[in-house]
Image 1 (cartoon, helix red, strand yellow):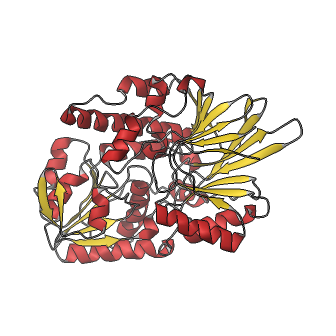
Image 2 (tube, one colour; image 1 turned 30 degrees about the horizontal axis):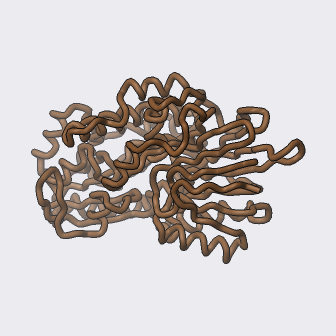
Amino acid sequence: MVKVKFCGGVAGSVTGACYLIESNTTKILVDCGMFQGSRFSENLNSDPFPFEPSEIDAVLVTHAHIDHTGRLPKLRRDGFSGKIYGTHPTLDFAYALLKDSEHVIREEAKREGIQPFYSIKDVDSVFELVHPLDYGQEIVLSEDMRFVLRNAGHILGSSIIELFVKKNENEEIKIVFSGDLGNYPTPIIGDTYFTDNADYIFVESAYGDRIHEDTKKRKDILEDVIEETINRGGTLLIPAFATERTQELLYELNELVENGRIARVPIYLDSPLAIKITEIYKKHERYFDQKTRKLINSGDDIFNFPGLRFTPDVEDSKEIDKNYDPKIIIAGSGMSNGGRIVHHEKQFLPDPKSAILIIGYQVKGSLGRKILEKEKEVRILGHNVPINARVVSVGGYSAHADQRQLIEWLSPMRHTAKKVFVVQGEQEAGEVLSQIIKDELAVDTHLPEMEEEVVLE
């Protein structure tokens, strides 16, 4: 028997990825992510798990983002004592991100007069259980379960999971979990791995109903919005996730600055977490693609160039908003749900000379989504803030594969696949992708619901 229970990341929900897989001898989770984007999501995070944590033998982590790792400390606190597997960068990033998340959760809980659903002690306790792996390294979990990690091309160290589960003495089921697939080609992290066969596939659908702009054009769009904003004497705000999006931006800004394609203005990386993550990137250069390694070997420090200023201290961050000279501010969080970017948005969104560049997925209900949808006024830090700044969106900077790329990734597996479970997307995106999979690949699909159980035949 091979049974799956959907404990998050189901149809209609981009966040909270968590899948329980049970064989005759073993129970594992693929990811244990936090729900994000609304007050209802916060309630889901504090609710009891729909399984007994002490019975879980292992957690396989696709990548470090909080919507895939954010409930690991709660899992540990509630009794989990098995092994946690992920790539070396994934586990290093996860520690930094979870520590940062714990601080945010603790501050929010204090404001609302409630108990946080985990503590920094729980975060530290999680990392007593980690086992870092390389791509292609086969791990035998039990007599009837083994797995291999492959490059998902989403963020550095992100993984596709190939899970093999024995049905009986002579028969094995291959289950492939996409995790979050990358918007290839992207700098630094290398290309997404293509699996050529699978019995069952779990595929993300964040952009299942959309096609990105050409990734090759995104640097030109970045250059244009910088030039236009600087020429008007404004400030360019870029809310960016600390992991991957920030480093890709630095990579491309480095090239624009060093080749004289943009004016020399201050570029602030105003995120202690992003600064820390960038240091972790430097530690894992062997995971960089060949082009980036060659660039580094030639003497180019891709994360350090004229005009770039790191502002880890709060006082340095406050000084940025006192200056109305042209500049670029990169700060978290990527969905404007917190972090230093909200202070800069409060200051500069009312300024018609300024602009905000949205480069990542914005969950429904987030401040970033409201800005993206060009609401005339938003609520920030207790104030009604008018949006007079220009709002620009660049899909080419998304770290997620779009509809075309998802179909391309699925295509080699279409001859063996019995079913594709469409997960981790809003309802419309999941439904659109599901129909295209049926029409173009002739493979059966299913959009699972929360806590639904499925037996894989």
